[in-house]
Image (tube, rainbow, N blue to C red; front, side, top):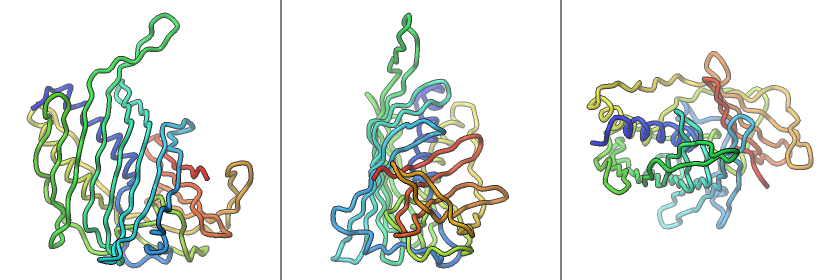
Amino acid sequence: MPGRRTVLLIFAFWTATLGLAFYRDVWPLLFASGPPPVGIDLVDEATPHLQVKWSVVRGDQKVGRLTSGMSYVSSDDTVWFYHQYAQLQIPISGVWLSIPKLITSTHVTRAGDLIEQRMEGQIAVLIERRDGETVVYDTLFEVKALVEGKVENGVFTGHCTIGGPTKLVDRDLEPVAVPNGQVLNPLQPVNRLTNVRPGQQWVVQEISPLEDALGAILRQGAEQHGFKLPGQGRQPLIAEVLATPQTRTWGESEAECWVIEYRTDVPRARTWVRVKDGKVLRQEAFGDGERIALEREE
C-alpha cells in the first residue's frame, strides 16, 4: 500500500476528478422514479460524428475543456456516450491536479439501462511555489488510472488500476447494485432535450456505481493508514422546469432558455435549454461553496 500522504493525494485526485467527470458524469448517474417528461432520443443523439465542445468552468474560472459524443451500435440497438476532458487544472488540498486527458464511456440500451462503464485518465500532482516573480509548478508525482466495469444480473462489478512507476492500486471493484432504466438524465451533457415544458416536475435518485465502487476501495486503503474517509450520502432530487424562460448570453448573442432546476431543500443543479430548438447551452451544479459548470462553445 502507498504511504499516508500518497493515499490522501490519490483520494483528493479522485474526489476532484469524479466530482467533475460525474458531477456528481459529470454529474453522477441519476435514476428517475419514473420516466421523466423531458426526453433524450438516444438514436437521434447518436448521429454519426456528432460531437459537442464545452468549457469546464469552476466558479468564474475556466479549468478545462470537454468534448461529448455519442455513437449508435446497430448490431444490438445500443448507444455509447463518450466524454473526453482535456487540460483540466484543479486546485485542491494545497496542491494542483493537472489532468491532461480523462475519458469516460457509458454503454446503455435504448431503454436507458446501464450495460458497462469505463474511465481512463492520467494526472500529475503539482506543488506551486514562487521563484522570485515567477510562479513555478514542481511535479510531486504522476499516475495513470483505469476503472471499468459491467452490469450483470443488476450488479455493477469491475476492476481498478492506479499506478505510476509502481502499482498503487490493482484490485476488483466493490459490487454495486444498479436499478434498471433511466441511466441517462438531462443533467448529463447532451446535444438536445425534447419535450421541455414549463411546470414539468419529476423525482430523480442519485446513483453512481463507478464512483461508489472506487470510493469503497479508497476508504479501505485510508483505514489501513489510520484515518477514516467519509462516505457519501445522497438525497432524492426534485427536477422542475421553471415557469418563465430566462435570457442567457451565449457567444455574441442572447438566447431565451428554459431552465430545469434540480433541488433538495436548496437548488443543486440547473440545465439551460434553448427554447427555439432544445439545444443545451449550459449545465451547472453547486454546493459546499463550489460551482462547476459546462458552457457550450458552439
